Length: 363
Image 1 (tube, one colour):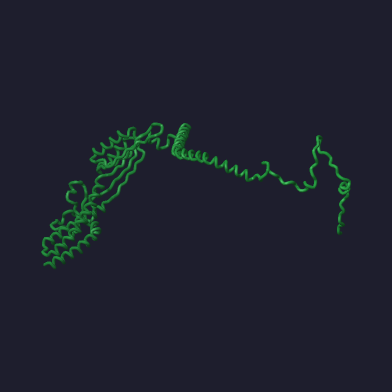
Image 2: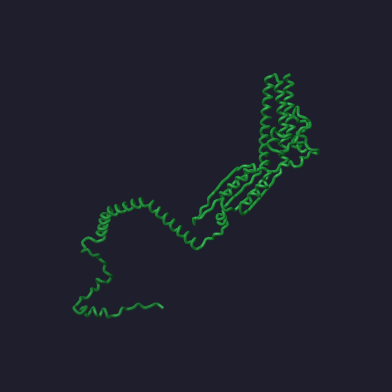
């Protein structure tokens, strides 16, 4: 009996994996039934039947049957709708409150919201707000029309994505996985050996994890297709004009900017000087001490240099060497009226007057 159950469990695992791979091809020909509670929670949420071989035990053959030819019934397409709007209003707070009211009255809610205040140098400013609204698909057009009348429409974008194939594929996989889990549970009820129970429990855990993943994906698709997403951006008129660049800078703006730059520069200079003041004080004290201690030493050194430059025995004046020939021709004595004539002997006068013989030049 244990061998039979173990072989059946292995065969079941192979069949389950083959069924999962063939579901994507089978979902185009047949639709799976919706999950429990889906029909009541989301009216019009389309379902499709599983393949005949993958239908859970006890399920009627006609439950969730698709239209002939494997086509999705008309009017049951699943579309994800998104939109973005930028509106200029007089009062952002009032327009934001009105947008919240419109979304709630339509059966939706506010998902995200952020508000910013823009300050300007001239004292004027503006407020801008960005809000994300989730509204039912049936009220999408009415909400868009209501929001557009809140002020001046600056921009608007809208998009739609058909995900019917994804919804059908996920629903078919869920039906197949549920049938597989049910079969594994029946085998566990019939198992008698501990090893068989352990093997079947591991297989059951794996298939339940896959089923939960598919259910989470189905919930995400359901949320996206049942509620449209509208991103609304509101801005005041003054802030919008400032962002568009209507207020161009003029002479006074440039003057104020220059004065501000001058004041900022002066402040930074004062900050730097304040940071350097302790260092400058220490440097000034060190310099004064150096001058005070080095002055006597410098005076002594200067006197030693002067004494070394004057020869010993001199009267304190430097001695200059006499020019050549000064000893042979003494300087004439000075008289009251100028230099006196010096008496020269006759022999000396003749010697001085005689010309010096020149040597013959060689031609």
